[in-house]
Image (cartoon, rainbow, N blue to C red):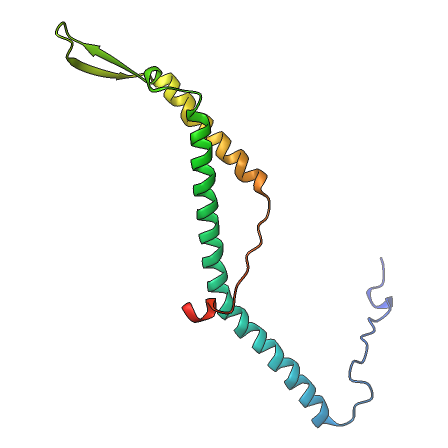
Length: 136
């Protein structure tokens, strides 16, 4: 059975040096704490702005991609293959039948192409300008 207490102790470096002055140590700890609190406050202020900008950019990108891909898929089809008109003997339209198979192909093609294009986009950079802080 191994001995637990036979290991070497972890040696923590003395970052304060030979500081015997407690006031100096308290000032350093206070300064580090103030920097950490300031950073937290700044991140809390920037986070909602950043979230809003990211959501807006994602919506814009999704709209552009979906419109482009829907247009590209619809170039391969025409409306005559999507619907069939039934007319009576007088030439009046009595029924419009939808052809489900080509419609389902279009729906699936558009969804697949949109997803492929979004996957190919990669990462986008989002910048926060100083004027954004005044809007929120």
